[in-house]
Length: 84
Image (cartoon, rainbow, N blue to C red; front, top):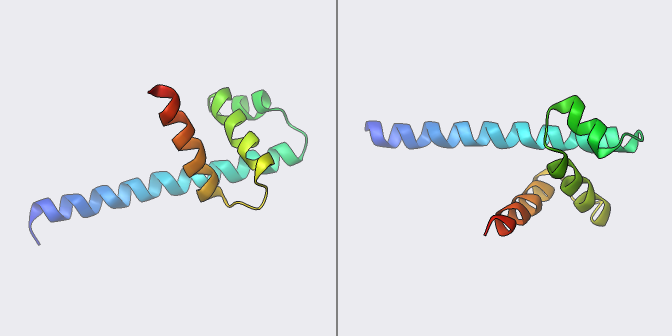
C-alpha cells in the first residue's frame, strides 16, 4: 500500500475516534441533564463550551429518541450555519 493511501486510512481512523469520543460526551450530557444538572454545570464539569452543551440539550429535548450520532450531526450543522 502506498504512503498516501495509508495516510488517508489513518486520518479516517483518527477522525472516527474523535467522533466516537464526542458521541460519548453527548451521552454524558444527556445523563447529567436527566439528573437535573444545568448546561453551565455540565459544561464546567466536562470542560466544554456552554453554548455547545445548550445546543445538544435543546436538540435532545426536541428529539429524545435520536441517538448521540444523529444529535451530533444536527448540532454540527447548526454550528456551521452560524459561522457562515
